[in-house]
Structure formats: structure tokens, C-alpha cells
Length: 245
Image 1 (cartoon, one colour):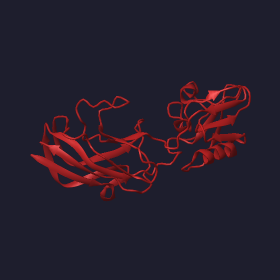
Image 2 (cartoon, rainbow, N blue to C red; image 1 turned 30 degrees about the vertical axis):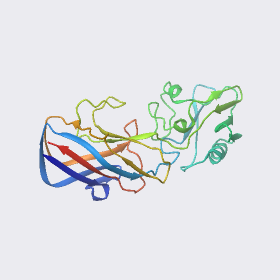
Image 3 (cartoon, rainbow, N blue to C red; image 1 turned 180 degrees about the horizontal axis):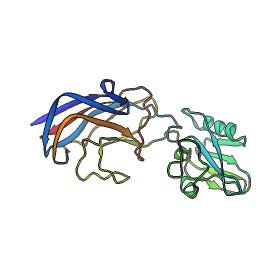
Image 4 (cartoon, one colour; image 1 turned 180 degrees about the vertical axis):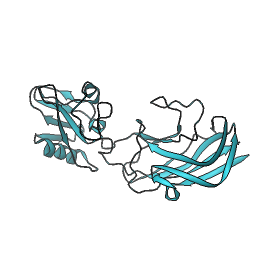
């Protein structure tokens, strides 16, 4: 028997467009069922700064200096300008290599996310050593010299892909980047900001659900690889969930 649920974040009972709860009018009973996701769609509304907007530098005394660029969807030249404005240091964009060069003070280099794990204090509100909310997601690891850091190839999109997840509809033998079993679908992002994103489970593929389920409501969440719900900026998320029972 096939059961189909059409979900739309605009009809949610609670939450946001990317992290919400759905209630059904009647209970659905499933026994050793299989699931696939079809016709998942939303608008790529992700800004350059969505994964993080902070730049971290060593202060030369064992602590951190932090600069933050404003929220926005940047191009290479406008990102270089924003970094220069935030730090007060000369920053240039190279259109030939798609790289950015930034002037630093000797002994006060830029820190990547791995280096930031050595710090326990000094992070801005909402950030930590494990999740620094840094601009490194788009800049990458820089090549640090005595007086400058070069980010050889930058990208304006904060995410390469996102995950559709559910704690209620957990699939057997799914192993996410953080070891979780709640991923229903991976969604590549290839079109850029403002484009319509469409995705589905591979053709002919179903994923086994865990045991006996009685569903009157369930959760859906669109997240980055760290499990953080992304910001759809008020744009809806919709999909078809097909159960083979």
C-alpha cells in the first residue's frame, strides 16, 4: 500500500519555513515501511554571510581580535570592500584568480576554524570554538605571509548542499556527517541565490523506516552539515513524502 503526504511549510502548526512541525487530520499507521522524498522545492535564499560573518585574528597576546561584516549577498569585489571597511586594512579582489588579498599586522594572522578550536573564550554572542560562525565558509583557509593573508579562491555561496531531516521519520542505516540517523534527503545547491531548488530521492530508491510507526504529526528541518536550520527568509519549503507500506 502506498501512502502519500504533501507537506508545505506555509501549513505548519509551529516553527519556521525551514524547521517546522506538521499535524495530520488522521493517524497513519506504518509497519516496516519505506520512504522516499519527491518534488522537494524551495528558493535559494542564502546570503554569503549565512554560515558566518566573523573574521578572527590573533591579537598577538594569546587572544582574539574579531571583525564582522554586514549581512549580505556579496560579489568578489563587494566582499573585499566589506572586509576592508570592517577591519580598516587594505583588501583587494583579483578577478583573474577569484582571490582576495588582505593586509595583516605582523604576528596577528587570520585564524581558520581548526585554529579557533584552541580558544575557549573571546567569541561573540552565538559563536563558540566548535561553531565560530566565521567567514571562513566562503573564504577558505588563507595563505598567511608576514604582512598579508591571501584567500586564493573565494565563493559567495555559504552552502554547497543542505539536508532535509526529521527526528520522527528516522531511516535505517542513514549516517549523516555528524553520525545522526535523521537525514531523509541531500539537496545540492547549484543555481545560486534567487534560483528555484528542486530535489528528490534517487529514482527507484526507497529508504527503510525504523519499525512500527503511528504518525499524527512529524517534524521537518532543512539544515546545513552541522545540523543548523538554514534561513529561507520567509520563502516556503514544500515536498511530497511517499511511503511504501
